[in-house]
Length: 285
Image (cartoon, rainbow, N blue to C red):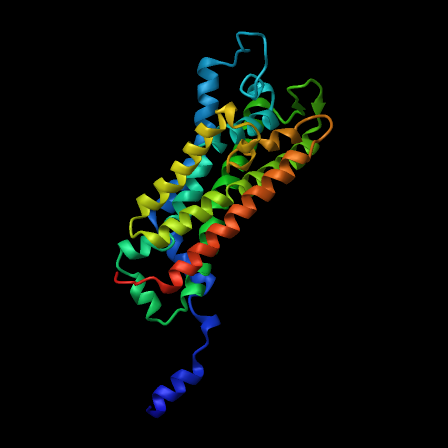
């Protein structure tokens, strides 16, 4: 070994490879990042236009839904947007960023160059996953923040009307909405973990994203099969809307706690498989 190679070996530190700020800058330059942020910023205004054109009407059976109360004030509108986006838009946003972690680099034929830096595989996947989760969370939080602002500007900064009757002060409603958003993000960890695992397995970002979204679709279908009984409680999406229990006069935490436990458990297992597989993956692109 030459003196220069020895100096390079002594100066090498795995913890300094692929800093988070570098990965953050790399990902913020991707077109899909700005498309996701743009959709999050525009969607609340599109929904407001839709309500302005069509208005809100009560259910045909006399019942009241979140959509019926959406125009009652800014807090109600924000909660409605969270409900409307939880089943698809938020899922796609998280899957989009996490499904691109490894498969995106492979499709651009840049993965082997990152590993040749050399960046330890576990560190590379961890750094990319952290940034993917951060951008996914920023998209969801940005969507709800814009919904709160847009709803307040159009419908007023009033208290939040509850489906069960009564009203929450705007400050209390904001605090509960923040907890609901945090829970929604935790429930999406299973989507993020599966998208990451599929991203490690395949060189196709669309395949990883589609597989993660497909999990949600299949889980939602199985959730409608009442014959499964209590077995439905282990489905990844069974507790997706447990955050609705936060918007009652007396908050019920049971569903939120159980839902978070199920999602985190799935995420730990799936991410463990992802890191294990990536450690031995034959990288050729």
